[in-house]
Each structure stands twice: as C-alpha cells, then as structure tokens.
Length: 371
Image 1 (cartoon, rainbow, N blue to C red):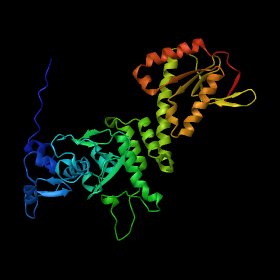
Image 2: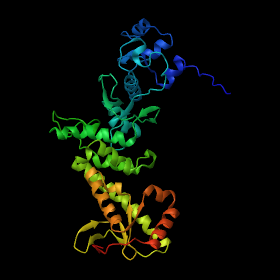
Image 3: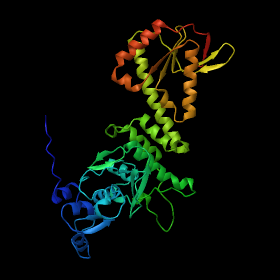
Image 4: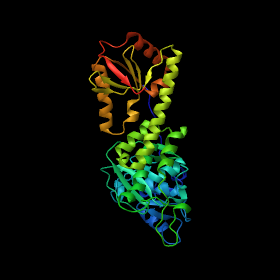
C-alpha cells in the first residue's frame, strides 16, 4: 500500500510570488494575518491596498495589467459570502487553484495575444465566467458572467482563461450588443483607435472578421472551425449577418481543404473521378440531396464533415434529411471527417475503395445534375 504525503500549503511569500502579489482576505487569514493587520496595512500611505472586495495588492504602487487580471479572477473565485471562512478561499484549501472562475471576452483575447484586440493595458473591463449559482456582483472593472455549462479553463500566463472559442463568442457578444441596441460600435473600444475624440461618440469598428480568422488560423490557439462554429451558434451570434458571413467563409474553406484531400485519396487509390456536388433527383423530379461526391455508376456518395456547413438546427436537419433519403433509396453513403482523414488517411482511402467495390443496394434510378 502506498501513502501520499500531503503537500503543505504554500507560504505567504510563495503564494504572493505565484499570484503576483494579489491575495484574498481568506488566503491572508489562513497564513496568520489577522483582519486588523490587513485593514491597517491598507490605510492611506500603507504598504498594501484593496483592489476589490476581499482582494488585496501587497504593494503600494499601482497594479500592473496582469495584477488587475489576477484580482478579477481571485474576486470571482470566491463564493460571494462576506468575510470569515465563507469566502471560498478563506480556509486555505483553494490556495492557488482559483477554481470556479475563468477570464473570458476581450480580456482573455488580450491575454491570448490577439492582434485585433487592444493590448492588455488598454482593456478597461474584465469579464469573468462563473457558475450560475455563484452569488457575486460586479465590482470595479470586473463584470460577472454566469453560465450553466461546465467551466473549462486554459492557463494563459498562469491565469485561468476560457477556451479560445468561448472567449471569442463572449467578446463578440459584448462588442455587438450596442449595435443591436441602436448604438454605434457596441462596447468595442480601448486603445488609440478606439478612443473617443473631440466629444464625439465614434468608435472603432468591431473586428469580427479579424478575430474569427485569427482564432482558427493560429495553430497555437488550438481552436478548430468546428469548435468555433458550435460556440457561436450556442451564443446566438450566427444571427448577426457580419458573424454569419465570416463563419460561412471559414466553414467553406475548411470543407474545401478536406474535399481536396479526399480527391487526392481518390487518385492514390485509383478510383474513378466522382461527380462533385451534383444535385440528385428522382425521375419525377423529386429532390433527394446534394452529396459532396457521387459515383453514379456505383451508387456511392461521400459526405464530408456535414456539420461544417450546418450552423443551425434547421440546416443540420436539412443535411440529415438528404443523407437519410439517399440511404433509403439504396445509395451507399460514406461519411468522412476531417479529423479521421488527418489521423489515418489510408483507412479512409481503403473505406472509399471498398464502398465503391460494393456499390449501392437496389439503388432507385436517380438523375444527377449540376456537375
């Protein structure tokens, strides 16, 4: 039997180093710092300062942008009960873990290093996602955003951030909300290009295209087009024409890449050239489907990442309907995902060759047009 020796909690100095001198009242009290000492140190001219409710900066100078992020995260990681051991971090059990809160929106994109977003010092508000049941209010520049979904965090410079797709969706929702309310530019601003000048209200245009394209094109962000599309649909942002136009372009480009690779496999496995995107109809003119690829001589169709062209349930139902009709009419449908194609192209090629060899089953005569 093996025994695990408990790891002692970090000292005050170690925790301050990890959290860039930003600590909660609970963390301080768990290390023997009484409330009266905290209050005394935070008086005018003292060595410490209070940044947010129950969150303190252990230095006299102003906070850096990273320290502001730490303060927002530590504030939101608390349960919302005032004082004592009820602040969620008060007994020291949560030291350094900051569970239950992640930075999202523009602040997270700035931490990720998005070129289209103002640099971190220009971010004037910090959106933090917490579980829906968390009892917290907005404080200072911290805006509490609640979610019923399970929180997923990615560490960025030691800070817990929402995954890229969620951060992008939250930022776009904030930036475009003003447009829906009849205000120009939404909440997008900050930095020289976004400052109000001359008493006017002109704001920097919302960088929808730039942010969406950067999210999927920077490999280190590990954000797929499929993940981004799902998050935008969940947030209701696909109803915005600007978002939908960019997303449609990204989805089409991704599907084109996958289809190009499938075409290469067709050549490598010495298969006949299939029809690309034909419209299939029955003899009487009844519409059936538009498969990505189709071999009429074999009654075999190929569908590539159908979800990449479906950003609403209506579109998904339309695509599924076409697939079901083809199968009902005897067409053998091969479903190819971009992920599987990248992981094991030989297996996909073998599947295509075997499907062509077997062909469809009692295929109803279909007319293929539009090739």
